[in-house]
Amino acid sequence: MSITFAQLGVPDSIVGALAHRGITEPFEIQAATLADALAGRDVCGRAPTGSGKTLAFGIPLIVGFERAQPKRPRALVLAPTRELAEQIHAELATFSGPVRIGVVYGGVGYGPQLDSLRKGVDVLVACPGRLEDLIEQGAVSLADVGQVVLDEADRMADMGFIPAVRRLLDQTADDRQTLLFSATLDGDVAVITKQYQRDPVRHEVGLETPDITEATHVFWKVTKPDRVEATAQAISAVRPAIVFCRTRHGSDKVAKQLGRLGVKAAAIHGGRSQSQRTRALDSFSRGSVQVMVATDVAARGIHVDGVAAVIHYDPPEDHKTYVHRSGRTARAGNSGVVISLLQPEQVSEAKRLQRQLGLNEPFTRPEIESLRDLAPTLADAPPRKPARKRANERSSTSERRDSSEPRKKARRKARKRDTHANQRANGERSSEAVPSKSEQNGASISGENARARRRARRAHLQTSANN
Ligand code: ADP
Ligand code: MG
Image 1: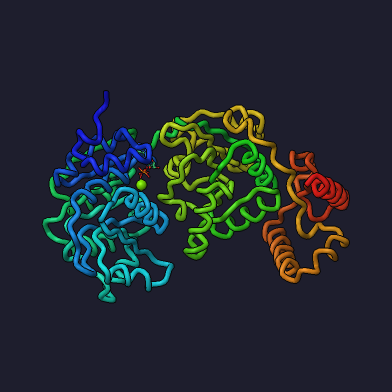
Image 2: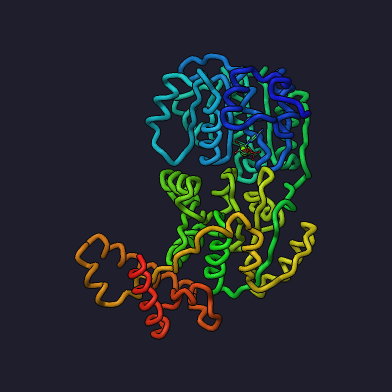
């Protein structure tokens, strides 16, 4: 039998709280690091996404808890993104008992953060930028911090936070315990380990790169205008899904285009406000949105369980990014599908990527049926409703009927504007030449073609009649 949390030195109250959530056996990184971390040693842990690093450092923080003075936390967790900070906070809160956990990050008002710091926070979860800002304002001091966690240290390095991390570490107590977790331990992370950790116990779990072989990888050749349609169809077979785009603008656009094809999608990227990002993540976790369209930076450290598919809508920058993106699915023993959409001129680069990753997959046209076979649990899901007609394709009668509601009208107008702008920006047109599934269902993705419009109108009427 494998080792238990209790045998690793985790107190009964926490063992109980975890068991309540169905967490009964430590994951490998937890089994490897908990005893040392609980004994007060510095730990340098490498483990892939989804391996359970949060509990590996979270349990020692809660167990080692000391009551803090106002504005003077005793433990600090540094995380690269707001989303990750929130997730850590939420995870710790499930077993923290009387320990007061605070969280601070940018992009939101200062009021609540200042209030909680004034009242006293024992464990502070923070993004480096806002934390430095609050220190400057005199709202918090790190002088009493005796335990520090650097979570996703490699991401913090990627995002340029290392200078800030150093400045922050320099303000904590000299005899602090420092726990560092990262998916990779080279480069800047190695330097931080060397300079800021004292005789750390090093635990490395899994392969150097996350084990992406747990997922099924498919590579589809599509033309640029067909990408949205291919994405929508893939999602109809496997969902929930995370779609990766290169730019913020691209993410917004793809989310809107998917919406027009009847796929509920939310965009998440650095250009959206914190409340928009939180809302998007919430709807995705709850399942009211099937797809999250994200940029690489925004997706860092986001952990959502049960993601069935990752779609590389734009190719990743390099094989490392491919691994990180793809690691959002097939987590914790679940299966998952990773789909790369490749325009003809991107295929040779993708072949190189495959070689770097040790993959050897064929490049095919989109194969929706075989996707369905890969997603047996979803095969029984009710068929998706045909995509709704686009706003600018409504018949004049329905237009008149609807226009009794001014807000709807304004929304429609805005959508229409977006559509035209998108088409202009992208030169995107329909994939009329290839009859697609949504066309069979009656949805047109052409704004121009009268035949398609008539077909769409018929389908719309049918849908309305069915509802
Ligand atoms: P990482 O930070 O390594 O990417 P997380 O700490 O976010 O991974 O954990 C991934 C998921 O696994 C979370 O949903 C978490 O609640 C769950 N989890 C962590 N440890 C265990 C465990 N021992 N047993 C079952 N589930 C766990
Ligand atoms: Mg994590």
